[in-house]
Length: 500
Image 1 (tube, rainbow, N blue to C red):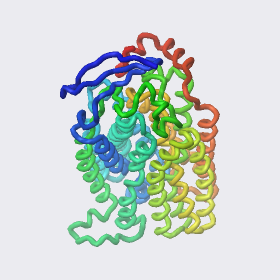
Image 2: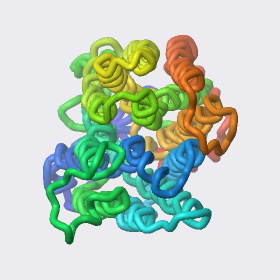
Image 3: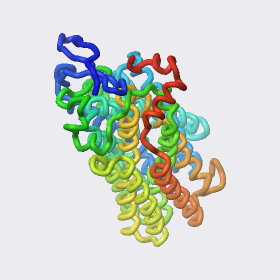
Image 4: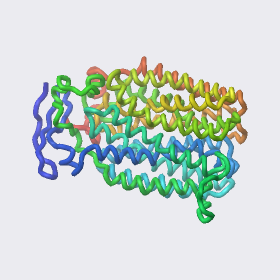
């Protein structure tokens, strides 16, 4: 079943051994998390969760915030939509570079998290809070919120989500969902605060004195969020640390895991090896993983970008718009660990097919509630839709580690996550084009245009379900050997790839 490869000691003098299975996958066994970290591994997971809750504010408060920014700066739907899309593009692609620097030991996970919090917090949001009106202000919004905000939040996301599989390679399912869920529901208190503090949710109602009136405006609230992000992401970053490459918990025999396996491993077997990123992309599965990711993110982020302004456009009460959108974000995050847990029983693929299909149904139901001017129908459908819209994020992160291993997961998953840039373009910019027929429309969509947009968003979810069901398959030994042959010696020499 395998053999002992080498023995050694870590910096603290604690012994470990490296063993290989029949496929050549390396496992470093013998060190406990406390010997490596000085504290239990769950502390890292909590720190990652806190970082995700704060960094996700740039994405999940946008729907509630964008109306006030548009009104204050005379921006149209096109500008707001493309601001969001460009943010997603930067947030997506920076993860490849963050993961590469992390794998090569240039930027460790601790400093990537801390720096990301500074960039997306006091730098990006601090700048956005003081942008002037007019074309100059619009340009500054793209640089501050979209570019710098995307870079900073992407650095935190990459750091936090990939660390779960590294510390829990044998039980990554619900833990990945738990950490990932913070990205969505961490925004809920701020969405409710925005509803109280800004004109989009009605007259300012926060019980603050006149000296604090700045914080009852949209711009003031942006500044407040930026400060909160930088401070608490920085604290969380202090506790972030990767395990040694190929680390495996000693309580699970890596060569006989199938005989004493956790439920998660039985439903989602470990990868044949730790693939380098080049080897991963030499397998046929990788492109379909990326495609399904982009498609479903387009559907999911359509809700983030447009549920709130759609409710306002349909004349629903401000309370219904806030409740629907806040409930959407809350359920989006809360249900992510549930999908991780469910996947331990029915597998990642079946879980994703289920979630994607149900999101298709309830996104159209949300449209129907708004068109019928039925506030209760809209709120219930939006909240249920939120529960399904987060399926993709933890499941794709977990399935990439299942298929391609944990050692290079920061870069491997980062290269899949980069497809979010395409999905983000679908969600806001392209959806706005579908609805209005122009790239930078300044007019609000009419009812028929809203219908076109929602049907477009729902169809993306349906296409994602078909892709994950019929085209995404676990790499076989033959796939692995062909990938190794395509990449050759260059792939094995890639930073982070284990020697064999």
